Structures are given as C-alpha cells and as structure tokens.
Length: 267
Image (cartoon, rainbow, N blue to C red; front, top):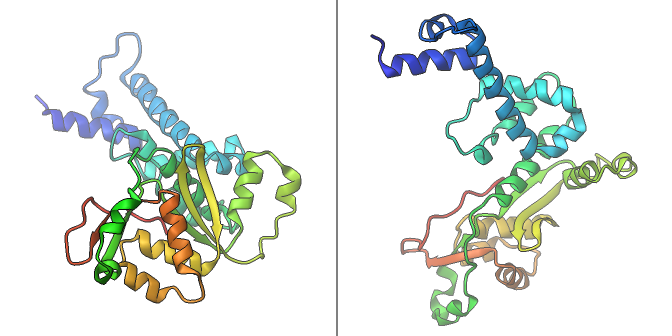
C-alpha cells in the first residue's frame, strides 16, 4: 500500500514532468485511461497558472501576443511551480525568467516591463493597512529625530530600469500604438515608485536623488542616515510628501525593535 506522500509525489511528477508511469498506477480508468485522466489534471493545472500570469502581466501579454505568451508561460509553469495556493502571489520570478528565456532576451526592455507589472500587482493585492498618524511624530524629542526609522506601506515598491518602461506599460495597456512607436528606448534610466491609493495603483517617476531617498526610508534606514545620503534634493519636502501620501504605516527608533515587520522593497 503506497503512502499518501508516495501518491502525492507521483502526481506531482505527472503534473510537472508528464511522467505518468507511477501516478497511473493509482488512477482508475472508468471510461478513460489513467493517462487521459492525468492529462486532464495537467492541462487544468497549466491553464490555471497561465491565466494567473496573464492577469499579473497584461502588458507583457499585449506586447508578445496570446499565443507566444501562453507558450512562454507553460515553460515557466513547469520550471517554477507555485509554492502556495494563493495565486495572486504566483509569478514573482517571471521577470527573471524573461531575462534569460531565449525567445525574449533580444527585447531589452521586456524583463523590466515585467518587473514594473509585478510591482503593480503586488501593490494591487497588498493588505489594507492604516497609514501612519503623522501627529505621533510630534511627540518625538528633537534629539531622537535622526533615530526615526519608518516602516513602508505594504503597497509601496520601487523599480529602477534603463528603459522608459512606465511609458511602454501605459501605451500597451492603453492600446496606443502611436505612443508606443514614439517611445525613445535610449532616453535614459527611469526611477519609479509604485503605491496603491484609494483611486487605484499609481506609478510615479522620480529623479535619481528623490528615488534613492524614498528607497532608503522605505528600506528602514534611520532618518538621519537617509538625510545624510540625500545630496542635491529637498529632503524635508520629500519627507513631507511621503508622510502626506501615507507611504509609511509605523515608525520606531533605531535602537529599539520596529513596531511591525518591515516590508520588502522591490528594487
């Protein structure tokens, strides 16, 4: 009698590697061969994950077309099966996959468009958390202000790329071929901040200094360290903007434990 673990591993090999030999021995025919029944599960498995990727990467789907996307997604699914049941979290490795996938490596901006899309997807599905009550900062002693360490809202993320992927992303989703054709891929690097607001997910372009200051703050650096590194920018004004926009949810002092776990920053 096989153990449950044996059966699960056999079915996993059937789903991911199409090795049906072991799993077929555990499946009753009843009108279909065991291989045919396993094929139904395999096709459903791949189709479900392909749909999840298509929902997370609509601009990539628009750039390459449905047939190419589905074929590319099927390769990815077999290489990177999900580790959990929550499909909104599936596909975070897709940009790196596109970067090395032979059929897409020649499109230099493809992986970075995917990185932006994943940041947008992450923002869209981030948990609802109350933003920091700015009035609490007024209670901090002036001597402790440099020790303040912020915790970013879980929807905030960052992308830096050598190509204007925000313009590409908007043109593709807007089906604006004229705008897409007018994009200058050599226009230089872009620094982007992503955040979910009540009106939806917003993608904001920042200059290099402002972007780095935001990254430092959201990565949990102390305010003093972030200010010291913020050369050539109006850091107080930028900080005020971040606080007003609700990009932080909590703060602590650098030699105390943070009040909540810091969120991962997308770089």
